[in-house]
Amino acid sequence: MSEPDFRVRPDALHRYAALVEQQNARLAAARDTLAGVEVPAGAFGHLPDSEELRDGYHDHAQAEQDNLADLMDVLAHVTDGLEANAADYRDGEDEVGRGVGGGAR
Image (tube, rainbow, N blue to C red; front, side, top):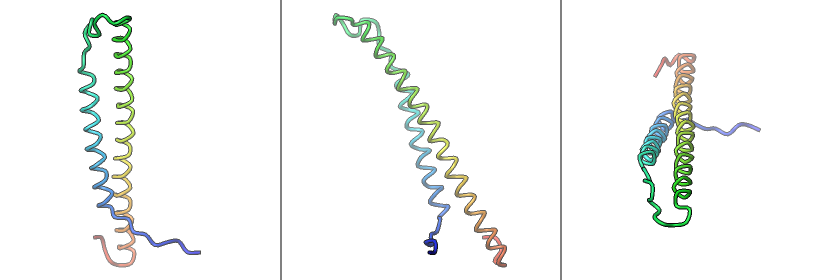
């Protein structure tokens, strides 16, 4: 059984890496916005346990900031991997081209 033919387009990998990088920047903006939100004492008024609600909000907001930071780290690795993969494919194609006398692209 033969392997299916496929072609990798390094330019498509670069474009997708750029898109992932843009999305990562949007996540950074969301994280920074969330970090800038302050809930003052008494914000929940006279609700029973209002200060516990405020503390719970702060805990949840911090957890979301941590989650966003983790996701941003993962997406940075995805971007790096896509860029490295594209470079490897391009270098491989150039090497094959030189090997058959076609020279580098």
